[in-house]
Amino acid sequence: DGSLYALASDSGRLVWQFNARQSIATPPTFANGAVYIGTGDGRLFALNAQTGSPLWSEPYSAGQAIQGAVCVTENFVVALSEEGVIHGIAPATGKPRYRQRLQSLSPGTTLAAAGEYLFVNSGNTLTALNPANGRGRWVKQLGGTAQQSPATDGRRVCTATDDGKVSKVFLFDMSGKLLWAKPLTLPYPLDASPILVGDSILLPMRRGMVYVVDAQTGALQWSYLLKPPPGLKVSSGGT
Image 1 (cartoon, one colour):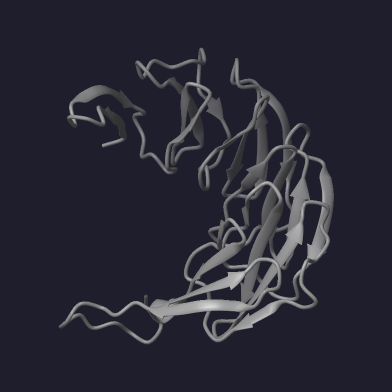
Image 2: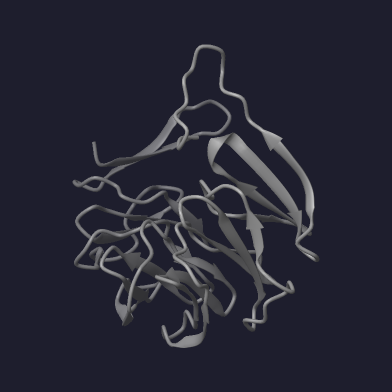
């Protein structure tokens, strides 16, 4: 119904409700006492996390639907719209700081941010930008299309390509240096973004496979096959 609901964690009681008057296209992002949501018509709202009241005099207008969760750093709010434009927004006022258009945008990708770095899969490349001004820091050719979003833990950034049959997983440090001798090849396409946990990388694959690899070496630590409940039919390309 175009509404965002805040519930008390101890009781489920409704604390507040905010009606955006349009479908909400992003998961909410909580940061610095505010909640950020984007809508299908390209508006971005900043709400007081305690009351649900708008923090900006008017929502930011991106012109196209916001794609993926909004990224928030100490001094910047950054959003990606579906036509491949990165929007830098002043957190206090909601006024535009910059707009940076990508040459291409991988389907369904979202932004990943940590400190002074912003990452996005742009076609066959992983692009690192400065969230303060949207300018590029470095670009790495991946040799294939990245179908999922990159992931970062503030020390490293991980992304993967796939051709519908196999995946190639890449791990870079924040300066863009490849940390493994070569990309890790896995026998299934990724079904979701990589997850960095300590010195391990969790890779959810199609057909219910989960791989966990050592972030230092790229060596397989373990794998697990998620089995569907009895009676549930799963297609060969499904999850």
